[in-house]
Image 1 (cartoon, rainbow, N blue to C red):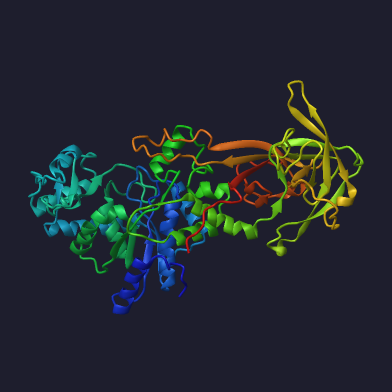
Image 2: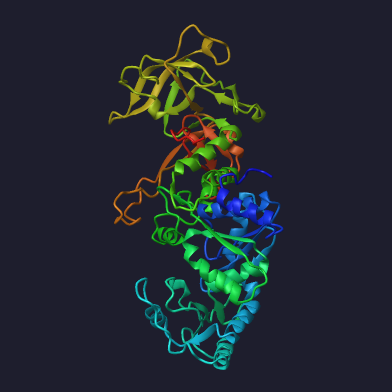
Length: 551
């Protein structure tokens, strides 16, 4: 067995005990998303936990779409979720839909009615809520609770036949209106809904509620361990009640674990939708939000997300994970796999006055010193180049290690240059530098007669390609003030857009290609906005962080 899930001990130990005791012969898990939106990194954690644990014990994981609410669900979300799971690198054992089981769920509801364990209720939703009681007050029984089995069967089949309006009647489980667990106070298990379903179309006008459907789905599929987030802990008694009273042959076990919380971000689909609807972000694939599509567009790799999810493990108690941990794993992936290249994000033009105007030479550069398999490349050099504006200072402080009048720096892969003249516009802004180069200092010649005042990167101005660079900062700023809503905490500087230049070698890059731009960080080619005439790069993450994984 692999140790993919070494940090998932409490769930893994349950599985080990169940296999050793003979309770189960194999481990079968499932990932059951509702197709009403796009997956985010919290779902990636659930996916990784389910698939890894089943794989570790030689079992399988089903992908099941929990499509019991036709008003919110759409086939486009089904396709997107399948695509995201495959992109993350996982393969499901079987593909199912909750709607595949509607007939069986209906029959199990009929069984409950015949056993006196379910009844049709005429109370309105507000009345049901009032009758339910509170944590300190017991609930009241509905006046329709003691209908006869025959009357309930007649009304329930009438609901199925479309004889009643939406909200006019519901089917409720008959359990205990005095239970300290509010979920056990006669929960609604079927409601009327005249909506066209993406899978069953108009065959049904009654739909099972999640707390009734989910345990039945697990039992029908023979799921051994139903892993879910901690908010379903109080629903577990109802889960077990449904499996038992519906006389399911398979007895799945629900196990809860803490959901993923990340600082400086929003994990709720509802809140992300609000950000989109109100124009704070551009869509579900905006690189600033933690959807799988957003992370993918920003440039995160499947391996980095999987490794992050494995490292944080599974705990029972909720906690907040520092997003720097996620950034650590993308750096760990790209430091080996991403080619290095030259990119100037905020350009300042430099004229090398003693270099021939009509000459361009090709210089040798390695693509990744840490990965020789990525090979070398050639980059052009002429008398006109761009450097970073921040790499020049007219009146520098002591120990300044960049370019300034009278000082000499090394151009990476090229020559030493010395700044001689500073050209300014009418307002006094520096617009161009005039420098000279020393041909004896060419990179690779072993020149050691003097040391430059630092090394800077550059791009040839005559051959470089224009590019747009997006630098991202946290979208949501954390606050100790609990009363501040997330909209109030939106960072107005969550993205900075710069226009600069990259090496001409980048002309054939493809969407999602990833590079390390010297000193700036790791970038990915934006798949949406890049065109033949304009390259757009999203910064995935900066080069360094003080964050360290605890051993």
